[in-house]
Amino acid sequence: MIAVATTEDQLAGVCERLRALGASVIEVSAPGDTRRVVLARMPDERIVAGLVASLRADGVMAVSRPDGGVALKKWLRDTRPITFDGRITVCRAWSEHDRRCLAGLVELGPGGFGDGRHLTTAQIIEELVDRIAGGERVLDVGCGSGVLGLCALRLGAAEVVAVDVDPDAVEAARRNAGINGMGARMEARLAPLSGIEGSFDVVVANIARAGIVELASELVARVSPAGWLAVGGISPSQCSQVAGFLRPLTEVGRRTSGDWATLVLAGGGFRSIHPE
Image 1 (cartoon, rainbow, N blue to C red):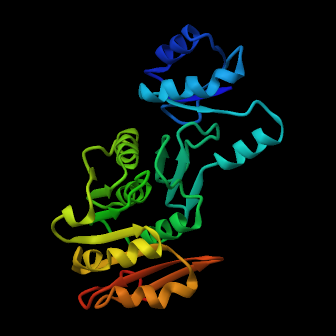
Image 2 (cartoon, helix red, strand yellow; image 1 turned 30 degrees about the vertical axis):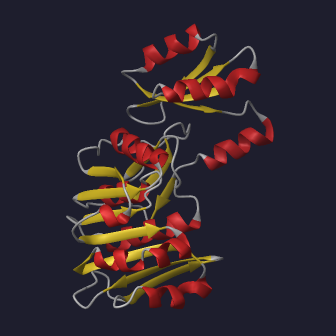
C-alpha cells in the first residue's frame, strides 16, 4: 500500500495521479486542518517501492505503508506524534493520527535524519523547549531533516541557518521548512561549518563525539558571548572529555538517558532564563 501526504488544495490532483498510475484510492483521511493523507493500493505490491521513489522524485510525499497485522501496528505506533512538554509536537506528514489540537506542530516529510524519536534528537528538542526565549538566531550544524531548527522557530526563534555536507539532508531541510511555512526564516546551506560566518545566540550540533571533536573550535567560535551550544550524540561517559574540547565554554546543563547524553555549554556572558 502507498500513503501520500498532501493538502486539501492538492488532493484531487494527487488522487488523479495515483489512479493514472494504476492505484486504487481506498481512503482519504484528514488528520489536520489542512493535511490530507491518501491511502492507495496497487494491483501488484511488488512495484510499490519503485512507484514511491518516482513520486518522491516529483516532490510528492509518498511512503510505503503496511496493509495490516503486526507491521501495521508498528507503523501506527512509529508515526504517532511526539509532544515535548506540551509546547512542541513533531509528526511525520503522512501520520494518520489526529493532530488538530496539538501544540507547536512541526511536520516532517521524507529524508534527513531526525524525527524526534531517537533520544539524541529528543534531548536537544527538550533543551530548546527549556531555553528558547524568543528572537534568537540559531545555527543547526549537521541539520539532517531540519527538525531542530524548525522546533526552534516554532518556539519563537527569529531565524535559523541549517548546514550540512549531505545534499539529501539539505534538500530535506528545505522541503520541511516549506511544509511548515518557515521557508523564509530557515536557510539551509550545503556547506562545511567553516563556510558559515558570524555568531549565533544558539548553536545545536547532534553530530556524535567524532564530529564534535573535529569541529570543536569552529563550534565554539560560532557561539555569541551571551549564547549557548548544545551538542548531542554522545554517551554519558564521554561528557567530560567532550566538554574539554569545547573550552573556554563551560557546561551549564546536561541530559542523560540510557546510552545517550546531551551537553549544553556557554561562555561568561550567558544568563540562563532557567537558572540551574
